[in-house]
Image 1 (cartoon, one colour):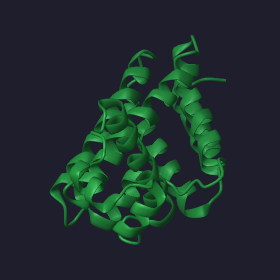
Image 2 (tube, one colour):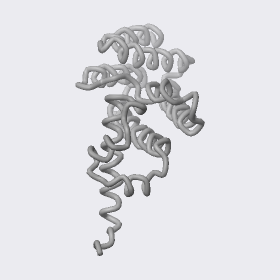
Image 3 (cartoon, one colour):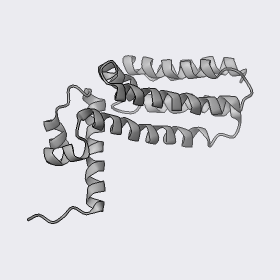
Image 4 (cartoon, helix red, strand yellow):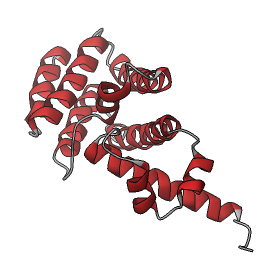
Length: 188
């Protein structure tokens, strides 16, 4: 009889599964990744995978939720080290440019998953909307500190840059969006 799985091993196995799923889903798309590929990439038996997540939809939501927390924390760490409120908003686009230039960048994970499954899964649609609202709120906080009523424009420029860079494979949309925001903010 196998030894019982410790709480620490449970946590490590779940993280390994989420790491494998996130990498595969982002690189190939959710529908292109079968459970056998997840089993092979995570090193976990299918029975264990299904104990963690009874349905693939549950796994996708967990991947998006975890990615959201990490992605927005990384963005905030970069932006919030800038003291001047207007320059802080511009730092958002500097961070986006670096993200767009990373190897393997395939655009917005939430837009990609929504495009694949958003019309057929309320849980996935809700998770995507939650991320987009949280990103909007994050931007709103930074823009509010400038005293200018340009939150929606900045948000749409950020979103547009993300989608355009994902499609084109070129980080230039971050630079173009930054230039537009510079004008909006009246920052030299």
